[in-house]
Amino acid sequence: MSAIPLDLIVEILCQLPVKSLLRFRCLSKEFRSIIDDPDFIRRHHNACLETNSNRRIIATNNARTTLFSLDLDSAGDVVAAAKLPDLPIQNWRYGLTSIIGSCHGLLALSSHNHLCQITEVLWNISTNKLRILPRIPGEYSLDFIGGFGFGYDVASDDYKLVRIFWNQSSTKFIVYSLRANSWRWIEDLPDYNSFYIFCQGCGILVAGTLHWLWEREIDSREFIISFDLKSEKFYSVPMPDIASTTVDNSRVIRHNMKKGKDEIVEGERRTSNKDNIKISAKITPVSTSWFYPVEWDLSPDLMDPDPDPRDILH
Amino acid sequence: MSSSIASSSSSSSSSSKKEKKISLKTSDGEVFEVEEPVAMQLEIVRSFFADNEDVTEQTVMPLPNVSTAAMHGILEYCRAHEEFRRRMPEAAPEEEVRAFEAGYVDRKSNEELKEMILAANYLNISKLLDFLTGVAAKRIENKSVEYVRAFFGVENDFTPEEEANLRREYEWAFEGVDED
Image 1 (tube, each protein chain N blue to C red):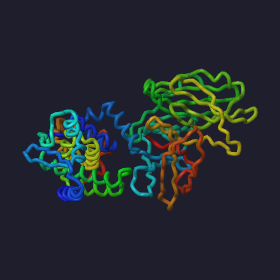
Image 2 (image 1 turned 135 degrees about the vertical axis):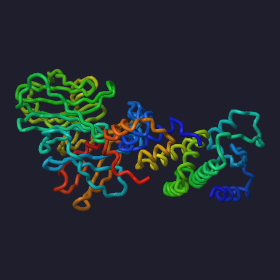
Image 3 (image 1 turned 90 degrees about the vertical axis):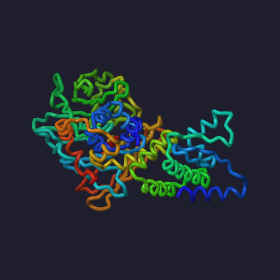
């Protein structure tokens, strides 16, 4: 019988998990070039978004010694948390690993060594490929502490990682571009510097913009600063009208742009016994950018008590 | 199978008025008399009748790229979906549709499945094509390289060294594969 035409083969390949595709690169030279083609990768990614497949939640345990993956595609109500393999990096100290963020299946992680030097890596969990970020150029003092953020800029088709350095006198920002594989200092936040702004934690990615909760040192007032990954400019976002609720930065839930509509991914998992965690995730359309905390009820010795629902990977 | 669905739907409607039929001729010369709403799911048929003003009810439309075997499979699927639509025009009975589709593909060999993919593509039935390519993906998802080469009829044009290198690149992707 006649062979299946190429466009239908691509249609079929688009519906396969990444593991199968990596195996089928061995079929023939033609298959390898189809599967390695950036356009195909983009199409496969879009197909995953369309069908909500290939999704998982990544979390660390309390001691930050291990990363766990919860596969949202698994059939049934109970999903076992799988341990992710150790990162293939020498001297990587898992004890101090933090999840900076995730975007399109790329996981951004950071780790301290004993000299308090920070190493950041980008890890494609599907292909197990890793990029160790270069050292940050120029002078920055080790007593600076601050925040992180990771996201994708559609305009330049680039992934960017942001680091914020903060001390009593100034706030500095540096952006890493995956395309350029380099860091670049960007201008300070002129209007806010004088107020002694304190910022820690990981930025929340909403529609190409990272958001952090900031605290002004002089009066402990909280407000939100956003960073547009495209223009690389900062904006101030007014706080929501929720006087009685404390907004916790780590609990703003990830937005998901789907079919042109802003929707929110809401995750829920319940411990049914020590090793199994039940997950349900639903998509809820929202009319404003504000959404209230989801309960995370987890087995304490297995998972972090307050993992970040942000880490739903796409 | 297909014939039972066909006879039950035509007998139920024959009491009211005679249903309009469309004649379709497969590559091996067999003529299928197909109820109009079912035939209109075949986009190629729908546009043939929409674009040609001089066709009559007696016109037999030739489908040179579709075998009789594939046509039986195609009509079984389209008739079942027409039946679902007729019974529940607002929302398809999801569980019933799933049960039908699961039973439907279980009976098809890989060769039959591929033949139907080609036929659904030629006849331009996007819903069936999406469904069948999804079935094909599920069938090969966990299979070995050799199995999938045979499935697509692909010639291995790598040297043994090249293939060994490629396998080494993602060794873990070759673990936990089903037996052929």
